[in-house]
Length: 502
Ligand SMILES: Nc1ncnc2c1ncn2[C@@H]1O[C@H](COP(=O)(O)OP(=O)(O)O)[C@@H](O)[C@H]1O
Ligand SMILES: O=P(O)(O)OC[C@H](O)CO
Image (cartoon, rainbow, N blue to C red; front, side, top):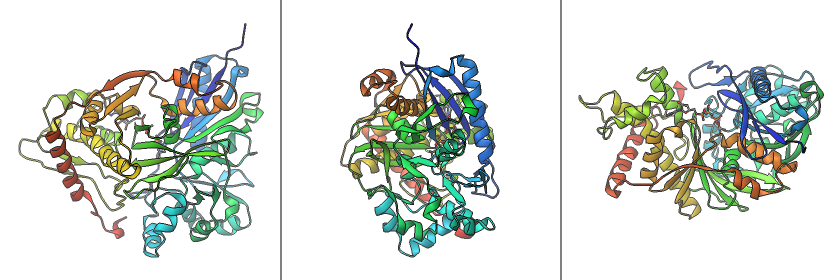
């Protein structure tokens, strides 16, 4: 009997760590999931404890393997995918982080970015990294840790400290401290990596005051980066896939050719379009990023990063207490024909693409005596689709391509009202896969490609199966009117707080 082959994907997300075992058909056969603490030391600041991240990831692996009951020898590879930009600095001498991980959502370095912009560095960063000078990305977070942890700067200059995004941290742990690596896609989110020369950029490291010796070695997204230490699984399993979660989802959605695009609806939303082997600069508030690198050849993408989408539904549940469960929002939204002119702009942590306004804050406009719970719930769901349209419009302008089909995934797009409204508002067909764990699937694909579990792209394409198509059916004038009103609502949310209030 021939031996079965499996690939273990580790999906380290913003609120939980997941482990999913995929069989050779690309189907998930077992899952483990573990949440961990969100730490909010001040308004606008978000941290995670790196040890808790690791522990939750390890617990999720154990739960997954217990469920699967598959011999370890049949796990041919591990693929890692992660919340991006979140920054860990650890001491090589102890293997311990010197400060909590500063999370992508954290706005603590907004003033540093303001200063750098005022000094005229916007285009330097944009040209070299494809990114916007924003607190979202890792570079200013590393600088903050070096400036605020006593002795850190001296230790960094002496070569004792290592910087990594979450993929690097997990690989460091899994390999028993032997490897300090990251892949092209994660490196491209740091503000320190030149996406054209494919090197850490000396000028940028100098501007942000980060010693180059702290940076990980950049490796392929699909390729053996190291082996797990025997303390974890008994045998050594190759770590053969690494990608930031949004790039992994692009890969898992089968968006392998230029012009194909996906949107993920989780806490935030991330719309990415594959642009092929040439980086496309953005003039519309998007970022240019590396999708993946295979055999040293990188594929680029345009990305619109939206900070709050599914999280607006959590806010309806936890803060406003208008709902008990996210699922209820679908029926509630459908109980009214429209929002009665109400718009929710969920700029809770400022606005990301295409506005990049750290000082925007959330607002509800258009309220009347007749506005009720259903209108607000519906407006909150619609805000997810409007923000995605803001980004899709920018993407079509930047790339010069039409997007007539959008692949979607993530927890919130299970909502059929949202999926249909999205198709209507974009005037584009929305295509949802059966396996919505496309992020983990992408990481598994990258790892399985490198280790011969899948000999090429053809079997991967067969593993992707459609669940549903949503066709646009809204009248053009209705679509235009709704969207124009949304844009007016966004204007009300922009530039709301003072820098001193951060
Ligand atoms: N049926 C639903 N309708 C609307 N939003 C939903 C629904 N189910 C889940 N969500 C939202 O989707 C998000 C969870 O999606 P997930 O992909 O697990 O996110 P993440 O990986 O960012 O934690 C939550 O913010 C939740 O509020
Ligand atoms: O953990 P997620 O799924 O919310 O994704 C976070 C993104 O990678 C941030 O850029």
